[in-house]
Image (cartoon, rainbow, N blue to C red; front, side, top):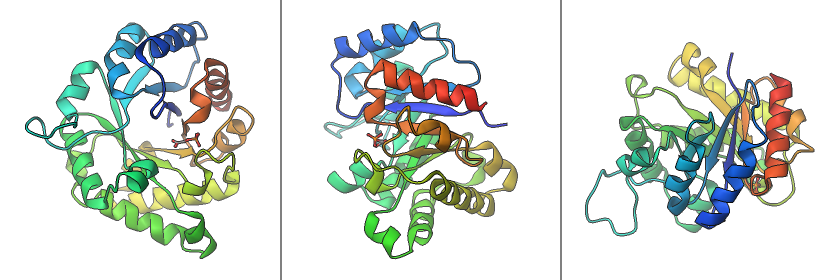
Length: 253
Ligand code: PGA
């Protein structure tokens, strides 16, 4: 039985005071039995958010990481630094990082390996563009992304893995994948993982859907058998909409 993971990806939003205010308000909405909740604030807010969440079940994650532990890498943040702030998760390979910052599969592979080395659970983002979908090449494309990202990690290195299926054309656009289409891709992802690692592991790992998830569409997406949670951008910025999505996940349990 996979526990659904509802993660808020705040992207480049919220100052430290705004982040802490959000957390205090979100805490008042709890508990949500049977759902794991994760907040991924920008780097400066990681520590204050983790402090504000101390003693709760809500987890903290980062939106990016570098693969070296320390050294002359101006502007980067290492896995041990994330662990020391209280992070348990890290988003890796988000389409915005691939698109705007030129992140490659090779860099993503190094980041994943470094995350596992330090006990961080990666949320590996994959997803096709509209052009790829229209060509009918969605799953070939995603399989290549998975292959590239996981090329450096063997089964013995992976403890927990989350894959977020995020069709690029659905991110921040208000267009959501049809639940059946998202299910089909998620099932393909799980089959790929089962083939690459093992069926047992693939059945324990969670696959999230991301891309314009809202309180209105969350329940239908989360009802799909291979969708085990959501990576939520825009709708995670307000407590009311984020809590409503968590509630939808709690109902599906
Ligand atoms: P969105 O973002 O919910 O605003 O579409 C999702 C994401 O990019 O993770």
